[in-house]
Image (cartoon, rainbow, N blue to C red; front, side, top):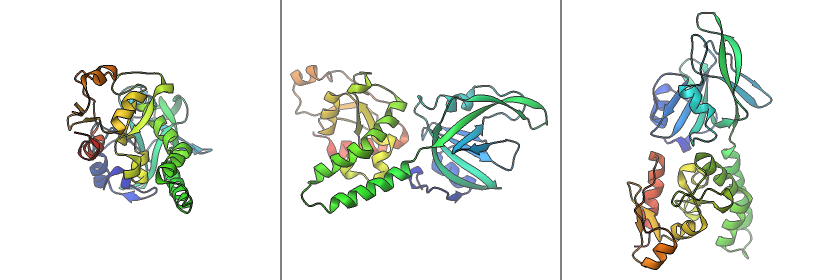
Length: 283
């Protein structure tokens, strides 16, 4: 099973959780560099005093004894709006049963609260207000729009795609990419007004989960988006920029792609990059 196959409110055991997220088998905050995720586990059977009010989940940070500090995975969660790490949330209501509540994000600034530690002593803890990222709702809405537009024979497939992107997919997708890094992946242009959320595996070839998967995207300036979209530039399995033989030297200079370049890729990105290299790249 992959991360995108997890259904809301599904219950899995610890072994499957570790296999899906490629994370450690213990702890309430589990960082995985392989999948670029942070798994949060709210264990209602232990000492932490997590609570939910008005749709906001107040999650207590890591550290069982003494005052908690904003280091390690507490720091990762505190910076998750900008560091590109996807945060996934589980609850434990019964021992060894992990209920998946979905991907979450910070709903406000972390704050300090007073709680008892595992020894019964009062101490300062970091609390993180969290809210769900409603990707599943967007996926259902895309399904609805596709069915609705499918009944209108006067609209081409390209026009239908543009309608759905403008109403739902593109804005949601771009915002997720901006949280990861606010600049063109190739030239470094950082003005968000000139950045495009470019799908690696094209929208028309992706299912609805892939259309919203941040791993299926690169932020690119308009010039590099056009080249990537048409397959004149791609990346190999190591992230090295690959240029089409159809590009002449003048175009390479004016498009700022004449130099060697390599992007950093997560494991989840590699399958999309491979698809682009195999199926979209113009040799």
